[in-house]
Each structure stands twice: as C-alpha cells, then as structure tokens.
Length: 423
Ligand SMILES: N[C@@H](CCOP(=O)(O)O)C(=O)O
Image (cartoon, rainbow, N blue to C red):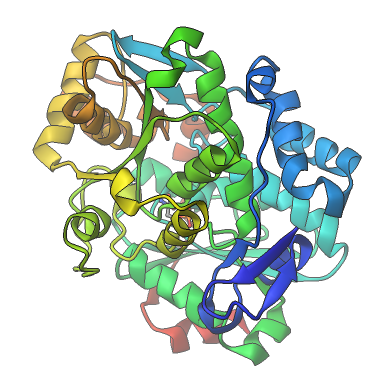
C-alpha cells in the first residue's frame, strides 16, 4: 500500500512506514495513493463481522503485510461486537461501545497497537496522544504494559467527563497522563509540534496513536460495513449515516468505506457548537473559532485534524463536498433529543444524541438513518443522570476505575514545557 503526504505529495511511503512515522514532513497527513474497490459487497455483507473485517483490511494491507498476518491482527483486535439497535421507526444506533474502554476508539486503537508491535519489534517507542475524552482510554488500554512503549496522553484539564478521566489517568506503569491548561486543540497542536522536532523524535522514538496515524482509520472502516450488514436488506439503499464528529477521523473512515463500495446514500457530519466544518460547508470559509465546552466534550474540537483527508478523498472520487451534509446541533437540541430517545425507551448519551438529532432534522420520508453510538452512556453519568433523572449503574470497567486515584501531572499549554517532560 502506498501513501503520500497531503502537504508534500512527493513524499510517498509504504503502510509500514506511515504507521511508524505517524505524520509526514511539515505535519502533513498520509493518505492512500489509490483506493481499493470491493466488487462483492453483497457477499461481504453476508459474512460474520471478523471475517468480513479481515477481507476489508486485506484489500488495503494484504499485499504488504501478508494476508495471514492481517487476519491474525484483526482477530486479536476485534474481540467485541457492534450491535445495531433500532431506536425508533426510522433510526438505528450502531453501538460501538462494547469494547474494553466503552467507546468506538477501541477498534482503531487496538488494531494500531497490534500493527505497531508487529512492525516495531523491540525498538523503544513513545506514543504521544491528544484526547478530548475517548481516545485516551482506548490508547492507554491498548498499549498498557507493552514492553519498550511509553505512552504520554495530553488532555484538556477539566474539559473531559470525570469518568473518562478516571479510565486512563489511573493506570500508571507505561501510561503517563498530563492535564493541559487549554483546549483539546492546544493538546493536538502540541503533539503535531513534537513531530517537527527531529532531535526529540529520534531521542524518544516518537509516534502518535491519534487518528493522525492511518492504521487507526483503516480499522474504523470495518464497522460501517457492519452497520449495513445488520440493517434489514430492503432498507440499505435508503441508509443515511450520521457521524458525531470532532476530529473527523470517524467520518473519514466512513467515506473510505463508501469509496470501497459500501452503498451509503449520504453522510451527515454532525457537530456540537464547535462547528468549523458545518460553517465551512455552508460558506466556503474555513474559520476556526475558540473551542467551547459542551456536554458532548469528545467533540469539542475546533481545528479537526482529518479534514484535509476528507477533502482529498472527495477529490480522488470526484465527489462534491456539497454531497456531505454538515449539521451543527445546539446544546438545547442535544438535551431534548437525549430525553426524547429515553422516552422512546433508548438510553443514550450526548454525542450520539447530537447525531440522532441531525438525522431527525435531515431524513426524508423514504430514508432511514443510522447514528453512531460512539460511547457508553455511563461515561457521561453526570449529564445522563441530570437530564434523565436517573442514577445510572456503572459497568465494571468504569466502576473499578472510579475507585482509583488520578495520577495526572499538570502541564501548561507550552511545547517547551512538554519537551522538558519528554526527554
Ligand atoms: N474525540 C477524540 C479526539 C481525538 O481524536 P482522534 O481521532 O485523533 O484520536 C477523543 O475522544 O479523544
């Protein structure tokens, strides 16, 4: 598999190199030079999730890594399900929170950790990662206890839910966490700056487990196929998928699935009031505004990292950006939708509620919608309890993390300060 640097297309790398480097020259993201197309989608949709995922990832990686290797990596990473729950007549939720850290990030982080361990051998590595809530836990869990790998996770202080914080800031060992005085965008900027510091990169074996790293995104393609596989066959042609969007890795993966031949009618990029992309799609002006804190905190991102990949993909496929529906959902709408879903007997959480609300606004009479359930409702217990008048029980992973003391360090949003902690 060949990839090129979106900022410097003359820099081309193999998948293995892209995974090991993380980011290209001048902070450029790697993007596939060609997009494989599957000609047997109906047959694939009839297959079990893991077998189908092996076939999908082999279309990208089989030639380079070997089909048996890819199969082993997928089997080891995808050990949990992604059920599609019908929540009302025309809406379904693809529940992506049945993995060890109760969020969709488990798919990508577990696959990446296995690919990196396979490729890096005994080389010492430092995985520097920014999180607005869910990536942190998934990365920490996927890399916890691995020899020769140090993980450093940056997150915006007091801007993630208390239980999200407990899930990755209580582990210790090779997982080091830093609460940054700033926004997620500040954390992500620090990660990217580190990639420009060649001596630092060499000294610590720098890499990232954010969706900067292409291996994360390829893994996420698989659950879009699963969504359509579980949808009643007669509804597939009219399926619209609403993606709760922050850093836009999830939407990129969905579009890659469509590029491979998955018949998704259209995608909705649903954001909270951090709405850089919906404003851009409406006006053509890319204007990043200061990040605001919302209940759907994992989507509190103003400068979404993956947007250049979305544009490159649309260009490569000849798709107009206007086919993509951008929709910003206010805090009040999110709350109302969460309550409405619960009254309809479906317990959800703020991120999924944003996407469900976008579907309610957008679907026409013939269409049916799938929104991605990106995290378990209990990760947002405070919001869910308050809005739904509940006392949600915690699943075992959260209940156990909740008992442990936080081990995070505080960090100013300064690269100099970060660098001093890393070397
Ligand atoms: N919403 C994310 C932000 C990081 O995005 P990533 O896809 O680059 O890992 C989170 O929950 O941390």
